[in-house]
Length: 570
Image (cartoon, rainbow, N blue to C red; front, side):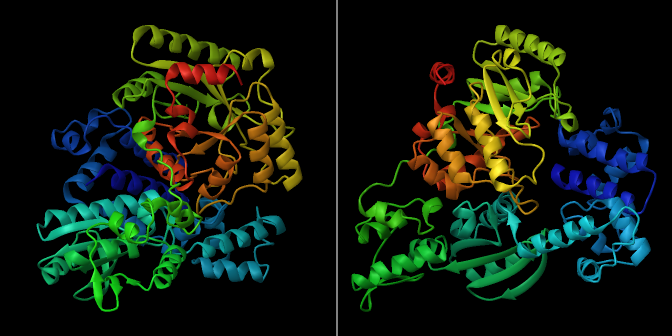
């Protein structure tokens, strides 16, 4: 059983215990165990097999017994019994922004509410107003939260769906029955949220491949099964479709099942104007197939430059391809260093030394450590004493290693009035300052815009962090005039962050292209809180590619001397 599944189950046990009103120390033990397992350096199955899991700090005898049962059998009796004792709808309610286990417990015990639908009706009927700890504002917030999750019902975060799709693709390839196999659809375009998984394959034995597909271990239900298409629901709740086509049809089908509806429509209109019929089976002049061995050849038949999958959104890519103006998009290998990394000095889960060592292993030549500033009490923000302690360790690491430069950075809170969370005397000592909003999200559009622009005007600000503050499928960004902020950042020469956390992916790719055209520079940052989080930059690279960015647009694609020169002249 993989580590992620174990971590998810431990966290869910903690939530279930909270919903039941159990002793908080009990639920906290499972949350702590989840964090411990998540950052384990050794393989979990090996620790269990060799009987060494009990030696891991924080894993007591009872947890060791349960984890051993879970890892060795794939099941946990305690979890199954606990889950049956709590209405499943209560867990569903946890997806509503601002609604935690304690309030859900009150709703269940006082009003007997067990589903999101019942809760929505109770809000409409004003039944929450009389409950202790609730009120009109709370009721409205819950109702608005329900509307939010209904809006995105059936959607999934890119990284969750992509990980499932990769496992599914690898499974199909290991059957030995596929000739070619690719992930298609919105996942191939690297959309930040997706509805389902599309996998395209060719095979000499399509029926046998379909049989093997429906026997994939992570399938919850088979929706429809045919010779060319089979649809299933995975255990994660994500829908997945497998289409099997003839090998000679593969390039046409891959193009068709990759592009957005709007891109495909525009391409068909172009084909029609040239007297060509275009569909997933091929390009046809009358009844004659125009043979293409690849997508590159398909675009070539229309006198177009190859359009990378990420750009196929009908956002000017066809016109650019006609003029030969599709840029050479940035790739992960272009990044020479990373910014925006948290350690155990604030709310990170990995030590500064471990973070730097992992960055070295990943081949980076520099890294900026940017823990939270002092006002971020919820994230153990650093006071000046802690800063000095961290700087000493950074200096020691720079003396120890000759292949990586560790920069003294900070993610400083933009306070409500637009000032930064340290004095100028402190701020000028940092190599890099990321300024971000972490509080007072309900300001008016004018106030929030003015607040962020004031931070941009501050001479010590280098990078504007996660500009809209959104959390995908959980929280809309705060109300802000993004275009005005982009123009201010460009005017003052400040860098816009592409936050690579798969829960943020902020700045939105739809604004990135606009910002690039205005002359903005960008930094693709992992917002890492653990050594594993350093690798999240790949998600940010996908968003940068969707925003038409090249390596020259991204400052952490520069070498260390170029970066230092760039920061010093800001």
